Amino acid sequence: MENQLINTGILPTKPALVAEKMNDVGFRLILIPFFGIAIPIITGMADQLTFTHWELKFSYAYTILISFLVWQGNRYLLFTLRSYFNWFNKPLRKVFALLLAVSFYTIPASILLLAGWFYIFARGVINWNIIYTSTLIIMICVVFIVHVYETVFLVKESESEMLRNEQLERARAEAALEALKNQIDPHFIFNSLNTLSHLIEEKPARAKLFNDTLADVYRYILHNKASDLVLLKDELDFLSNYFALLKIRFEGAVQLNISIGELLYEQFVIPPTSLQVLAENAIKHNEFSDDLPLVIDIELKNNAVIVRNQIHPKPLRKPSSRIGLDNLNKRYQLTTNKMISVTKTGNEFIVSLPVLKIT
Image (cartoon, helix red, strand yellow):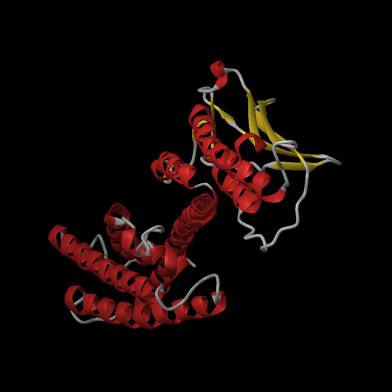
């Protein structure tokens, strides 16, 4: 599912590694010279009494170079190993690999570079005790710095993963909503063509009027296909047009009563074609005639549109496509984070559609 969302462009591609994004220039500019000067002072490598002023300068420049080479080498190893090991999946293997890598690089590099320092600045007299002590201090510092890097990585990765999960959930919801919207068109066309076929056979004179009205109705669907919400006014106007189609076929056998003040029409929004789905559902599941008409009543109460009709069930000759109410309920959840309410009493079918008030 995730790969499909990425391929279709709904979900952005996975961000680059945190290591590649980390800006640690300031961190290095401060700490590399600090360690390059502090460690020789702590271990007594550079004797302030016997070294001249320029010898001390060159000596510290050399130890800062050692600090730079050790830091950069371990930084490269750290970033490289991140693509092979994961803290969450294999933490012990990650720790072992890090310790092994930094040890195999830091210890030999430190010993060789420190020996070079003694060869240059101590006239070849190597003090191995100072080298071992300095190497141990360098190793401790490296482990500490690696720990700091990994902590920063984990924090940034956690934030990045949370953001990505939110993007993924949103993309899944958008994809699901789009799929539900796409189900409306074929369902509506299927029923409309059935009705038009029926009229052509039984009432040819009304077939043309039905066809013209159908164009107006379908124009609304196309216009609002990309919209998650529309004004209640637009939805009620669309329902009236849709009911005009029903009146062409069924004449007085279907009736629509809207008991909502016009002043409220533009104060609320609702998912498009919601009311049409309910009218279509009532037509599909009930028997009606001129003597026993199907009456659909619509009112607004407690920030919800209430749609009700009398129940006169009829046997279905074809199995239901199961798009109607299930589709509508899922669209409602994805669009408004609310659910529709369906109530069936002894002789009445009631659906409550939550509407959102425009503030």
